[in-house]
Image 1 (cartoon, rainbow, N blue to C red):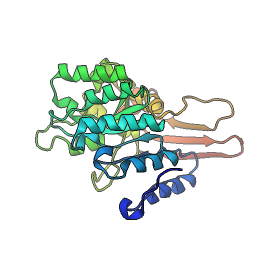
Image 2 (tube, rainbow, N blue to C red; image 1 turned 120 degrees about the horizontal axis):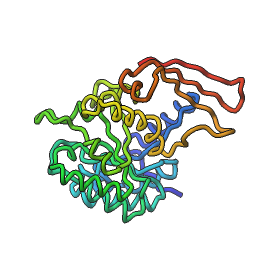
Image 3 (cartoon, one colour; image 1 turned 90 degrees about the horizontal axis):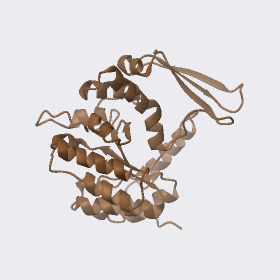
Length: 289
């Protein structure tokens, strides 16, 4: 039995969770992975631990949160890792989402993930303040993340929109430095026309194009690597099977480009082909950027 929270203490409870599941069930080939996210971290929210257990019982793939906002960021980061390990799920945190160089929880995260044996199951999204610190410091942080098996997911739309308003900084984690340290890296979209960022789409090619431009990653090799991030590395981080196997549904995105580098540079039209186990049940749709 999982501990349940009275609605008077939990606001809307799990109604939004259930609404997403219901909507996704009506759309072919959509896979939803839900993450429980206490904004201040587990240690600053009453009953947050009970909510985490409830979310895990409902199939949450990871424990989320923004422990850098907690009263004690280090303690909140360690607590998140310990609870994720206890529940047998991954760790997916918003980390250092600020351009203030003094805000740094990456070393704590790397140590906590390593101690909790979460290698390959821990994700740090944003990591914006990393770009504000001296390169030698940032490199040590990147190396610690790589050693602990913590992936970094860069969210260029939200980071460029929210960070650097006072300083003019780009607000992006240093992608090239992460690559050099062999950190597993993904590209994500944290905000899609919501109350925080009023623009953006769910198009990862557009997000990668924006990251290439803002992150000085416009060389052919860089564009190819960003393409690999979209089509391969993101899937690995999300635990989604790569490639096609006999008996599994075919879910293909056909991109009108001669290479992955061209796909990032041009963000061309695409077609999505999905077929289930019955050959006669084939759905073909076209998506334009």
